[in-house]
Amino acid sequence: MKTTLLIASDSVRALLHQRILLGLMLIALALIGIFSAVLITEQKAITRSAIDESEANSSDSDSGSGNAAAKGPEDVSKASPQTGGRKLSKEDQQKLAASMDQLSSVLQGAFYQVASFGGSLVSLFIFSTAVTSEIRKGTIRITLTKPVSRIQYLLGKYLGGVAVMAAYAIIASAAMILFARIGKIEMSPAMRFAPWLMFCRQLMLGSLAMLLSLYVHPFLASVLAFFAGNGLYHAPNPLFYIFPGYSVFNIFGQILMGTLVSGKDVLVLSIYAVDFVILMLIFALWRFRTKELV
Amino acid sequence: MPAIRIENLCKTYRGAWKKKSRVNAVQNVSLEVKEGEIFGFLGPNGAGKTTTILLALDLLRPTSGSASIFDRPAGDAQVRRRLGYLPESVTLHDYRSGRGLLEFYAALTGIPQGTRARRIEELLKLLKLDEAADRPVTKYSKGMLQRLGFAQALLHEPDLVILDEPTSSLDPVGRKEFREILLELKRQGKTVFISSHILSEVESVCDRVAILVRGELVRIGTLQELSAPKSFKLVVRGVREALLGALSATKAEVSIAQGETTIKCPDEATRASVEKLLSEHQAVIERTEVETQSLEDIFFSAIESRKET
Image (cartoon, rainbow over all chains, first blue to last red; front, side, top):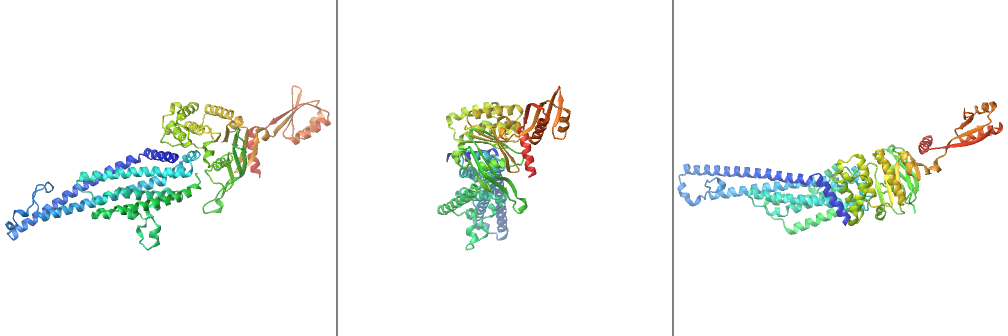
């Protein structure tokens, strides 16, 4: 175990040397900036259009029926800072709130999608090159003539990747929270489990990419692993059960609808991810055991 | 128990599509390296030296045959604790300093924390890397990388050190120091296996050598065993005109200087025929000088013999 952890920490050190975490944090900051700017701009646009609509309606009713007084003062809401001090009717306010909620859900969903896609690319890069880059450079030859078994080596490399992806999940979560604070929006209930499910999906992708990289070029392994999901198939098509079910980890729909992802579902998905990763690692170990290291 | 035992080792690389692209990198190689000896593994570029080493170290899989280290498979963790290896082109993790790298390998080989720092300092000093120890490996020259690679191979005081082209990037001073370290290892009873094509280096330190040509082992033994007489020089008294005439018909070269007649025979057959003529003409052989082959001669004759077959 000690040897495996030594290899894992060395692997993390190598990735840190490539400034991968710094890159991830910069990406996260860029995402926060871009999405916050979009959110603020869209909020202003929605508010302006709501006011314009409200003003148009009120002038229509003033000139048209002449019964504006009949509406009474209770139909006009208090001026809010959001509306720039202008007064909106209750109905318009409800419409505005609904539009804002929709905007917030769409942006949260998009933020999640971008963070998840970025994480998948990082995961594919890390895991597909973890072992193969050392074989290509020749550094593996010295390491494997030390008292390090091939099993310890491969597991160490995988754990190193897991540590970096965990750091990515933490950075992505912090970025999502920061985005919500900046935009003063309420987090969608499904977002509670979003980083964990994203992390599980990335580990699944990574384990498959690592296995395939022991057979083919890392780039091809990454492409194959990415497109190997069963999203194109539906039960009872046998391919649905053979290919990895990445799509079930995508909760974009739930974020958009503002629905909750149940703890039970998350547990089942986590077990599925762990099983998948273990299976891929067994296959990878089987291959690596006899792989020529040149 | 031999330090290394290689039996009928073969390695064939097959092309993915074409049968013609089959390459027999190592063919039926068998050898034993005894404990405590310095063994030279020679061969021209592409002879299969590195492939043989990688097969012995379990980094490549043989097509057939087997290799063992201290009578166990090289993949065995116990064996690896007794083994140090310096690869041909030293590529080390470039995100560490020289000292950091040695600390990592020391941890992997299980050197106790208490003795780790002392051992690392000792090696850095021995290999003249102490001043550059905290510099990143990326800033090291080729020679420094080779020294660092050598340091990691010696770090855990292994019983067997396998060195693949260990001095290819070293300057003459570095090579001399390297030879001294090898001799010190021998004094300590360690086994050293060196693959090289720098013949003078091998000649000066090795107890036994093996020569590999096109994947086949063509010679193995001590230098004395391998060096056949190159030529014979006979210093003769009482040479007459008639004898000189008879000698001119042979392959021998006759030279007369300061009243001394010297007859140089290029091979054993000529020597025999010259000695017969000398006896017939009643000339006396005062002394015979035998010129033996150097390692370079052995090496080239091995390559030539392989070309002929």
